[in-house]
Length: 299
Image 1 (cartoon, helix red, strand yellow):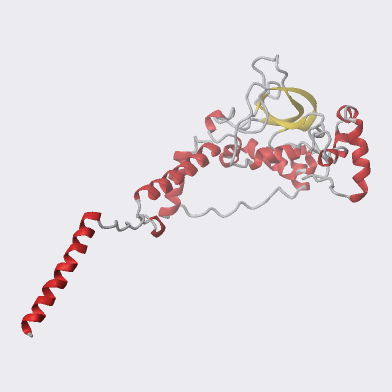
Image 2 (cartoon, rainbow, N blue to C red):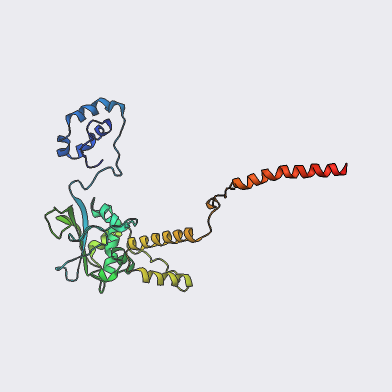
């Protein structure tokens, strides 16, 4: 457990959570002393070990986030809001399952170190200055929500913030944040700083990829489908597809032919009524007497 919660008292399993409490010293000081003794008694058995997806845990002192800003004059700046990652402190965290927003996730990785550790970030800044629509759609699927959709910004920069969830008494705010430092300097097209970074990362003077032919019927159909679905966010689209497939499968199961194991049980033969059984028994002596009389006449 990464948060160092209190262990389940009186259980050996709960006592194994004691080392994780070192991540939060205040929690470690409130642990029951019996949990410490119990852990010391079984520590040599190595019944459990620490596990983490990353070598260094982040977010304990606030969630680091990079906020991009654009400007036309270099004095008045507008924040560039992403669809999923924290930005606007008044916007609630969205539900993205089962979608994985790759760019928003990579922005969090970039915030863990200087921008030179993430060369792709310089390429992102260049694409925003150039106003490339495919890149803009990674930030806002609905281009109308992008603050510079009519004209690309002249300047782009990035700031580093620390985010925390707001307190219960703060109305209308989901986050509270604190400015840390400038993450990426203000640059524009042709800026020496930007050109130096592009050369350093091998991103300058690259030949553009060959444009694929859009004359085929499949390419035109995909382009039309994307234009129709572009206003929808990815989680909404994925859930719509999942529910549609589920509804089709349910209808097929209800209206389609039933499987062999669904055959109704065989009907059981009912016993003959007692009156008919008595009649058969009474007719048996009569048949015997008639047969005996016939044999006598023959003699």
